[in-house]
Length: 146
Image (cartoon, rainbow, N blue to C red; front, side):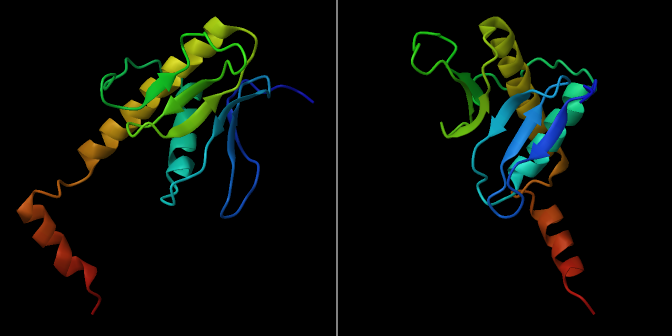
């Protein structure tokens, strides 16, 4: 089996209960997504993360105080040394799979967290504001079919 120079997305359980796994260029599983919240956000995030990693993006975290965050950096729990990426509601969303190189795992976790927060910042910027009355009413007539 030859190794690719690209990060890849693998869907371990296709269907409603799909499990997203991101593999590194050597084919090793590195990111494991938790359960989707029903919005298929994991599909979009997984594709965005893979594309961004392959493009070599290393953004600064645009929302380090209120966005998604990396948990488990203290390294104090030897029973469960997992690095977890959580959403702002403290729900576990991704796990950085252990490579026995904590520094490398932490760097990947920080990079992926910054990518996720960048993704959501871009999504917010591309969505019309719900509080914007004008854009809301302009869209409604186009919803009806003649």
